[in-house]
Image 1: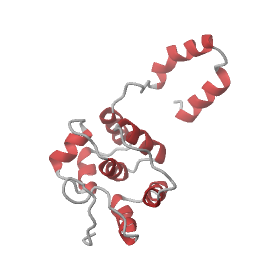
Image 2: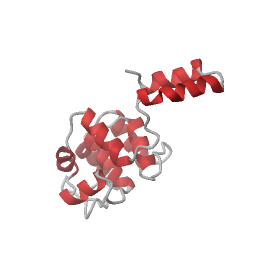
Image 3: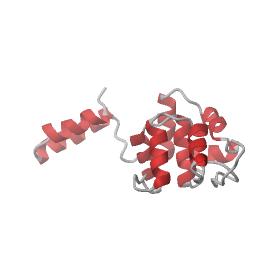
Length: 158
């Protein structure tokens, strides 16, 4: 199985011209062409690969069942806070989170932003959503996926 890094290296080293590019593109379906993949398809594939169910995600986010299902199934817009809550609940890696943010039309995590730096730290260390929110709360920063439909309001009841 080729990893994304393997494929990147292949493109860098083994595709010197357009003919080689065309050959690569013919094979891309073998590698799992995801260029037309929606957020819902990508996220559901990721959680399936990690052995996580949408019910697990719901429990970990604390978001209402129907609202969480609508986000996961592409039936409603996913805000940046809720996307990050879904990502932490699923234990996604930073590159997977960045792709989810892009697919949902939300801004990338920005390391010069204090709150984003805390979130990046939490993702890189595999913190749970609850632990990430405790860290955000300790720094008096907006929480992820908390409140009415995940508005991220501060709550001392962590």
